[in-house]
Amino acid sequence: MSLHHPKVRRAAIAFILVTAVLDIVAMGIVIPVLPHLIEEFVGSNARAGLLNGVFVALWAGMQFLASPVIGSLSDQYGRRPVILISCAGLAADYVLMALAPSLWWLAVGRLIAGVTSSSFTTIYAYMADITEPDKRARAYGLIGAAFSGGFVLGPVLGGFLGEFGPRVPFWVAAAMSGLAFLYGLFILPESLAPEKRMTFSWGRANPVGAMMLLRRHAELTGLAVVNFLLYFAHHVFSAVFVLYAGLRYDWGPWQVGMLLALVGVLDMIVQGVLVGPAAKKLGDRATMVFGLCGGTVGIALMGWAPTGVAFIIAMLPNALWGLAMPTLQSLMTRRVSESEQGQLQGANMSVASIAGVASPLFFGWVYSVSVGEGFGPVTAWLRGVGVDAKLASAAVEAISTPGLAFYLAAVVLALAALIGWITARRAERDEVTLV
Image (cartoon, rainbow, N blue to C red):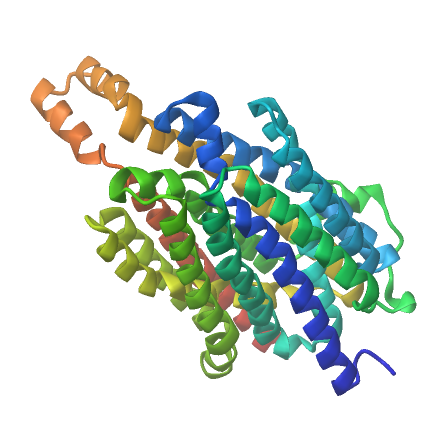
């Protein structure tokens, strides 16, 4: 029976969503404890913020290199074997990180994790294989909800396990990735029919070659920029949130885990329930822009929030951010053939990975200087160019706040909303003209 038969398709969707949940739970478990493990090694909150940004950048850098290869391999050999190999590799990597005696071991672990977690490109391509173009926004919303479900359980479990030691969550994460491998081995069906496969080519599989696909149409290029900015802003959380929450609100692993779980619950509601009806009523473009604007407001309020309660309230408008990614993916997948879905997702992940390299380094540095070293060099430069000493000090004091990274992320997200509106509007106008 074909995967496009309604019953088989529903079963396949359930299989891929369970695989995604297990994968994300394993990743989410380590989020509340990895920055603290780094802090144990270096003995400084400010330095830990900077180094955590470097570690996230290492992970994203490997995704940049590996994602196009993973996507193209799945276009030739199918989605299932790529997902299975990635799950097995991730399990082995968590064991390595659990045993890490130094920062160098942790760095190697993050490099390996960047390769193995590139299977996310294949999960999106899998969903494109088994859904019609006009239903992909809702389908991608389900994937987003599955990811969010993993982040509900993962950080809560990681925060709880972190109370027993910063290495315990890594062992549990290894077990969860192993479970994802076994589940996929016995349950997950293949989604890409042999006649729809494309021969692997290094010309398409390298990051530059893969991203050439995005230049095929002007609207793909513009939407790729939105994708970049969205991920750039999002990495403020992976770079500084755990340390920021500990410094400003005195939250430990358990509180951080519970808060991340709440983020996951809100994201599940938005992506699993609201995306489909919103896209049907408003269209993909308006839904995407509305989500980006909600995220802009929420993340700016997070930077301002003087108390933990205010930060939690700011999560409500920020949750609307979940409307953006599924509709952005839907807009992009309509502009390539079925045999190029893996390549497209690899290209998208490469773009996201570039943001993942640059963003944590940037936000990690911003956080580090705003709470640690300060903006002394900036003050000296302002005075050197003739700015009054009191005025220079006042200007620097105004931006010397732990929430500065969140304010800058809000600006980036607002720019993404503007570009997304203009690009998608032009694409819709071109479609009407062609018809």
